[in-house]
Length: 284
Image (cartoon, rainbow, N blue to C red; front, side, top):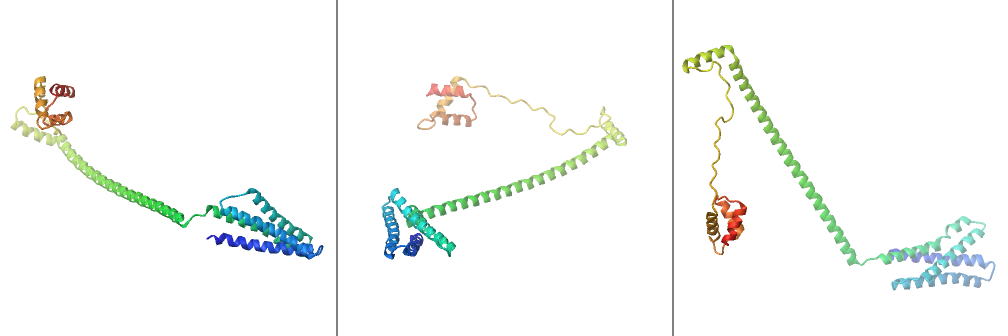
């Protein structure tokens, strides 16, 4: 994985150094002895290579030096300036030489990218842990979505069933109301009919004296009054104390107030909470 960023940077650096040395030899070789031009070219490439090596050493130690970085970029800018100056002074193929003048800067940029990659690189174990966490999160999200869809489907089914049942009940009630309406209309017609009224009057008058000449429709619902509830007499304090003491000591150990109160109410006995708690205090 490291070679994916290191190899392009190394290749670009080598091409830039060779190109810089060749341009210096061609450009300055015509104006001065070629050994001098060779020294100049090797000086530019050597300074660039030395600062790059020192930067890589500091990066391996987890350190960084701004001064070394500035010097390295200075050598890169010098090499780029030499290439641009050579391209501008060449009468032929100026565009072609300008097209390759960016190679030193590109090499420095690739080394910058490689440094950033190294500072953010993770071990295989860490990457595996991250993938596991992401997969677990995806699994939980998928399960939550499936649960929500299932609950939505269940709720939709329930609402559909309730709606259909309600519709069936409404239809039955409507049919029942219609039947009752027709029966009531028939009774009303029979009661209001003149011939029917005379016939019923003649029959009822012969059977029962002093009967009303017209009969009334039946009344739906109870007509007899409901008798009032008979209230049990209230317990005296002595009777209440005796009952509380008996229920409290019905088990060993003695029951708590909550248990005694529950059994007191379950036995059908009646007393206010204030009186019951006061009796408990007197007995306990």
